[in-house]
Length: 43
Image (tube, rainbow, N blue to C red):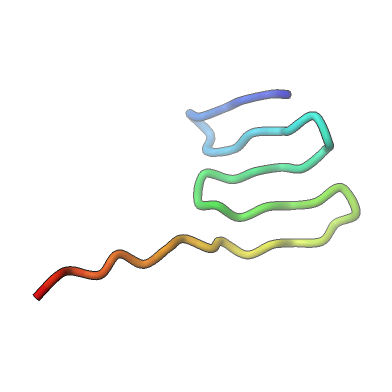
């Protein structure tokens, strides 16, 4: 595992690149788009 918070990414032991914006790049080249939860303000 490699963690580079200053660059916004981590390499996991299974070969997945995990980005700070919650996006992922899998070892087979598949991309998982960022999936942040939206915060809703209480009215």
